[in-house]
Image (cartoon, rainbow, N blue to C red; front, side, top):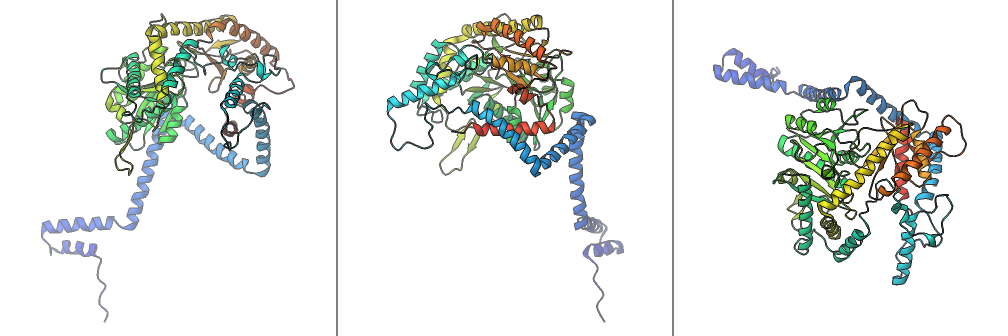
Amino acid sequence: MAAAAKAPAPARAIQASRSGRNSNKGGVASLALAWLQLALTYDNARTAVFLVVVVRYLDRLLRHLKVYGLTASLHQVYRAISARAFALLLKTPAAKRKVNRELRDAMKDVEAKIVPRPKHIESQHRLPVLGKETEWLRSELAKLQKMEAGGVDANTVATLWQMRDGQSVWKDGKVSGAVYHGGDDLSDLVSETIKAFLLTNPLHPDVFPGVRKMEAEVVQMALRMYNAPETGAGATSSGGTESILLACLAMREWGRRTKGITEPELVVPVSVHAAFDKASTYFGIKIHHIPVDPVTRKVKLGRVARAINRNTIGLVGSAPNFPDGVIDDIPSLGVLAKKHNILLHVDCCLGSFLVPFLEKAGFPSEPFDFRVEGVTSISCDTHKYGFGPKGLSTILYRTSELRRFQYYVKTDWPGGVYATPTLSGSRPGSIIAGTWTAMMKLGESGYTQSCRDIVGAAKTIASRIETEVPDLYVLGKPLVSVVAFASRPGTTVSIYDVGDGMSARGWHMNGLSGDISAIHIAVTRLTVPVVDEFISDLKQVTAEARKKAGKKEGGKEGSMKALYGLGTGVSAGMVIGELASRFIDTLYLV
């Protein structure tokens, strides 16, 4: 006779505890163990995992709904589905051929403008077999430098290359931002400095102690400009984008190490620099874009507060922002940061050496620096209104402990201990030396006067647009160097027609997209003497745009209208994204 099947171990334990064969204490323990074993069966474990996943996604959904609300969240879902559908549509042969054909046509114009191939300049595709003579190099460099003047004059008639000076394209003051010229004497002095320190590298402070000293002093001078406490610390970087990347990296690491945050989130105004989105992509940070008030152009504080949760590592404000030139309400952001024990970064890359001198120059200002409680880091470019050579910025922290979160240290590398304060390894000491020279040469008095001239010109432009160009209006209340303006509601004037008209007259303007279509000018020292010319051209161009409105005219649209006039829909965004990628490809054509 077959032996009776043995009961499973959990069942036996339960039976034993019920039959009293164990003591009370032992029976309770056995019973608990039995139920635990039963609970941890495969099916129950699978159910538990499923519930954990559901709860996590539900938690994310609820947090997202809290930030954006139901309507905006549904709109985001719609855009995501539309983007996927449009991407699939573009894979169909007919659509793919049509889009590629239109993109190729658009890129022909871009390539003709960006990649001129003058017959008098050779193209180089490989190393020369024998090195070139010095005189040949000097001659070729002179030709290349003259290319910077562009290929056409104001009447779109080709200019003989021998007649160009290679500098009028920016020295005439018609470029918005881009070139921050501190004067010929300063440029000559900085050039001498760069030559003297050409081969230096701060990665080797023992070899180049002078560069180390100058870098430390550049950082200290910037900290004092922004009223940092004695605990303040900072570093130099390759530019504003790297400074912002470092600030975001430090916030992420601070959240991970001090609060155990593994899914970091950052709350920023929609008007912040795109480098914050780049940092979000690079460092795995979820970014919440908060809208700005349509009138003041400052971030909506109520929406910022709603976006803060247990995964928030920090907030961001601008002083000023790039699109509108408006300073966010930094004190209120500081209150929120303190309340929730999170960090607050203020992006002053554009305001740089202007905002610290506003009051000294006699202009109104708003709180933005380390005097505001809650501000933990600031980014400030020296290569903009500091008039230093291109390729240097500073990232400043309230404490040296915060700065450490941006460091990279590897102790077990076979090549030795590797430690760097920023993203770069080797860096050009010559740029640091040139920056130190510019800061020491100008001093507080020089920067105060520069602020007085530049901000004064910007205020004149803003005032005259409001009073002399009725079809346009100024966005927000710009306090620094950027003046953004749009078509006044009710007018038929297209702001992008205005932008293209200004381009035809030699002005290099910035087109803006978003909740309000606009263009802006970032005033520099070179703009100051041509303010009257700017307003005169703007008035004439606006009048021409008014006449053009409503008429179906032949010919091509201007480049600004062709690009920004597409709108901000899903399909337009994908096409513009592809166009932008192809533009970058064009930069590396020979």
